Image (cartoon, rainbow, N blue to C red):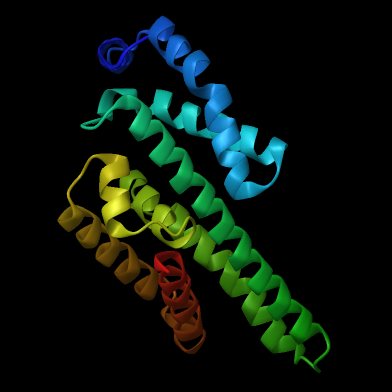
Length: 199
């Protein structure tokens, strides 16, 4: 199957053609899994990453905007997805290390309660964001995507991403103003995680 066939399948996919989606899946699945394993060093994780990517492709099919070759888009997407997983794992490990450090210290029970309560309030505040703004925020803060990558992922402008992130952060600051002192360290963590994702 040549590039022209790929382009035709992509256009049919955008219209919701399941057979076109299945054809692209069968053509690239194995090679994409092999590619993903080079990043994740785990066969099962690689297969899950590729499957998740294809699910996202199907879910956002009508908004897909592939200007390069379909193959290039698929492999670039799975690479980014794997790198995001690696970054997310690093953040989890950093958090686990921090918890371990705290566990050997004498922690004030009131302070511990505040931290637990804050995490719950943060999640509720994020959940209360409008759907698109929440999606942009989570792609940035939880998956470590750069604004340009989010814009490409959602087929919107970088300016829109910047504006929505600004509104999301303002909403969180307003919702969590009672935790102002604790939020500073939280946003620094977000900032550092974004720096790491750019490295």
